[in-house]
Image (cartoon, rainbow, N blue to C red):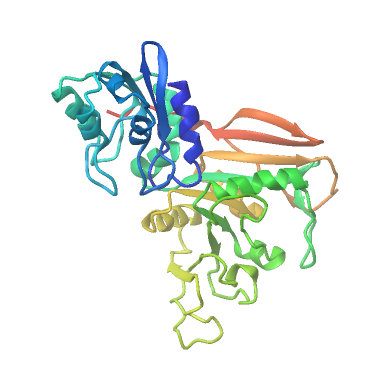
Length: 358
């Protein structure tokens, strides 16, 4: 099962909105096949594992290990449970049940009805953590939210300024880690002030992977349209309380490629409004990059799941104070040539996701 989890992580960039899943087939104490779900719309982990077996006759006395309950419905691919029955695999070991309403125990029931021995709950907590984004989206009806920022050794994320270049706190190596995070999330959020002062591109130029949906809050639609966010190279969603510009509105170019608008209620707490709006758009994971007020608003609302905080070996003296985490549980801390990156989980939210449902 640990090998299943390792394999599943290979799908971190392209499996969504499906969950990451890994599968291993064992016969006579030897691995004879393995696979993972590489991309949404393509074969599932069980299918890839079965296809990898060089001696198919061994399947009739093998055990299939899979990190998530095999699907039982027709989606973009046929049900994996039907294939397992067809191949007459006599025993299946499942890490955790699938909370998706079209599965939710039906896959296991189908296997048992065919006379297959099914064992569930092996490394269940680890398997649920593997699909925490999928679980958060379907059980909590919001995206899985990751916070990220870099700060100086004395606790600032930037100097006080009204324009000009920001303080560069990340090194080339840690910047690659940031872009890897971007590739692993479906959307990335910044506030209006960060968009205006830093003019970020919010792309994945230092890593290999899909470009995220860029999201910016702009209540009055006052951001200049020559910002990188509006260059059309990747989708950008503007959250506003104004009506979306008409195609004839040349000041905002409503028909500009890859530019979309969505109204939210700025009189209500913004983190909840943003999470709800992105859930409606089917966004399963969100990376919040700034600025400090936006990050702190998610922290104060308790609306975050994990955080990556980079500390650079330099002093700013005074400036924009870094956000302060609450209810955090540090799970890892590493140093990269003087830069320290701390990985934290929201203790309360993590407990809710890992708690067994039903």
